Amino acid sequence: MNRPLLLTLHRWITLVFALPLFAIIATGLILSFEPPVQVSGIGGPAIDPARVVELVKTYDPDNKARGLSINAASQRMTLQGPGAPTIDLATGAPAAASSGLTDLFRWARVTHERLLGQAWLVTSSTIAMVTLMLLGILMGLPRLRNTLSGWHKGTAWFALPLVLLSPLTGLCMAFGLTFQSGAAPASGRPLALPDAIRMVAASHDLTHVISIGIRGGRMMARLYDGGELRAYAVNSSEVTPLPRNWPRLIHEGNWSALIASPLNVVTSIALLALLSTGLLIWARRKLRKRRPRSDRQAGAAVVGAR
Picture 1: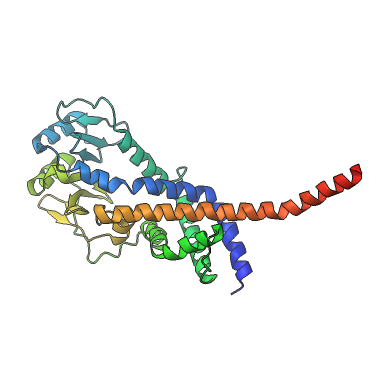
Picture 2: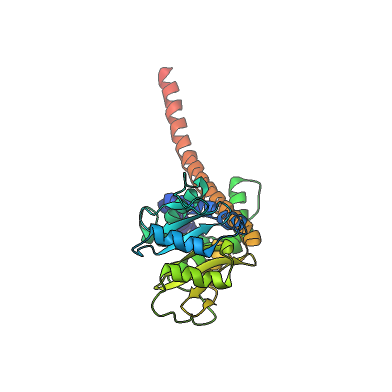
């Protein structure tokens, strides 16, 4: 392969996509902490299903909400919909203030999935990230040295499985590739939210529930089971576990909050290090090329002064 050409492509793709990549990686780092925060919020004081149903009917009498999320630790629930309030389960009143951490995760997820409101920008930047890694692989094994370039190349190669798996699973999610081992059960017309809450509560503790709502035209529940965030289809007769969506589980770190979340943190830090060191290497080379010209100009000025 023509190594100078590969290096030029690698450099220009990095420069073109530097800002969106930084935003995507930084928000990914924030979201890496969401699974352990969610796990720390489950198993709080018991939640009365009848109380939740009553509050849903009170705050959503027209059945316009698409779902709800629950935080057992803070005893709060949030209806999914424009302007929907966060409700205190103990008092039944709107919560005095929303959780700053919850708002941060919500902002990070929206930005991570739809940067500047454009999903295509995230997808194209992720494709660029994979292309950068493939170009790096084609340039061959590095010589490890205690230099900025040496650290850049060493990080890329030693963290390659993690930094490559992250954007690949992201692209699988973007293009709807689930690699599920079985077909999802048919659910028919989605249940009304109050009925779905009763069905989920009949077989699962609501303190382990993260959300109940309509996804992909069917009523679903997401809850933690043995440290894994599982998805369940909810219909009028049963609550059935859905086949695992492995790209999503791996990308979000929800297959194991205690193991996958730290791995995602390491991955995000490695990607930020690669992006920043790559830009620094380019900047130093540009300055090095300009320095001889400025030196010559300074020398000519000295000669002229004499």
